[in-house]
Length: 209
Image (cartoon, rainbow, N blue to C red; front, side, top):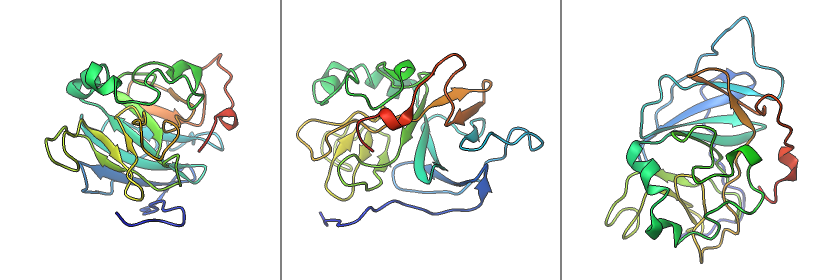
């Protein structure tokens, strides 16, 4: 596997929404590029936040937006994927299955590491050297690795994460993928960069990004 000596963050942009470029990714290695519309063009999100329309995002799909210049993965997990997050075989392979390390807001310290179980919101930067992990959501006997359970594989040094961004044991990355502050404005719109009402969480307090 080739080594990387610099941050290898994918930055393919098709436009600007709320100050953030928007990119889409579907399937394991195929990328498409939908431009997400703001839910209300007359009321742009506050500075430092990004609103994402979840309606076009089908189960099993991922899109990527940018917040604070970081790539953010937004995943619509399938029922099968949500079941896998509790699989004892998977949990036994994870370095921090209960998210005890401070890599997420307190309201996402759960097995799915999210506000709603079906939607994951993750900073798409490997906690080893900053590469962008590739999305392989489907379990496979052989691809991209033998006995793959579904999740992310870092192309630089091989670190593995599940579909909640939890890192596997015995790989270079020391921490789970960070979860940014986020809240739902409705059933189909999520605001990244803003905590739920009544919650105070400083993203700068996490261990590593």
